[in-house]
Length: 423
Image (tube, rainbow, N blue to C red; front, top):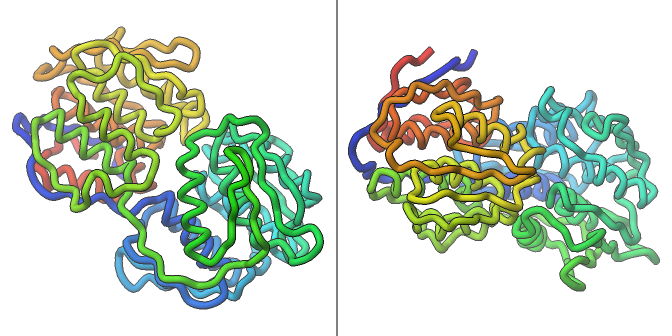
């Protein structure tokens, strides 16, 4: 059983020290899948060990991939160049990357695969990806438009041109791109993946996908801003280094500016290739954040920025965040509820925008508030930042951080943060 709650004690001093974020969840799950699809043994270093990556690794093991974990940040993956039918449905918890990526990849299995998740995952949309797979002639169904998804594969991915509506998630695009090299060589090759319209959530994550694919031997050509041509090369084993998680880094960057501290992340701020690294330039402007912040290309950083905005000198409107409503929870609503629980009127929802009223005088006050995290790791970690400046902030279900940052509370403690009322 995880802890039910945890109350943060404001440190009352700058947070100073070294705190290295875990490996990138986004890159780890891409690398695990590609290594699992490759023939031979790959060594992934700097990897994240968390709930999300465990679900991906266990699913690959169920399909015949050997994965060893010699230390806390390494996966040694040995694949056969193909996945085998699993003996039971693949259970992926609430891991969006694992669920979306595997839904496309298992179309290459010779047999039936059911991709499923927990009660939260069963509310997260996957219909655009299912529709795209069907258009290629793949036998796939998801009656509710959310998991579970049943895929009846014929031993390889499909050839041809596929269009995908990526307005809800860039993960749909990444899923198709990573599966495309598994198509058969022949007259219909290569596979062309095209956007239905130019809208795409967090395009930078597609760049992460392409970089990982190329590291494992794929040949991808970007035709234009909305389409890619992928050769049917399959994948080859590779040794791959995973950079620290930029989304996790945002909490430490925000903790630093909130407390006037100095936190060494062990990696230069400019060294991240992940989209959420764009948040560093915004965070560095605190307490003079922009009046309007477009979160469309740094979606997982929005909870961090929204809580930071509560202490800003002037109000902040967050736009381009409609996709946050279909993440692990409705994050726009969760942020609004949490902020207003701290002080009524602190947040307002206008359509899919979130307006944070901002009140620097909150710092130093005691405002008891129990924050419902909705089992969402990012809501838990971002509202912990409020507890650095306000007394009485209690995080409910604090262990949900295990999804991407299992050591989060220990890392804050190592910087001087204390907790009470732990149950």
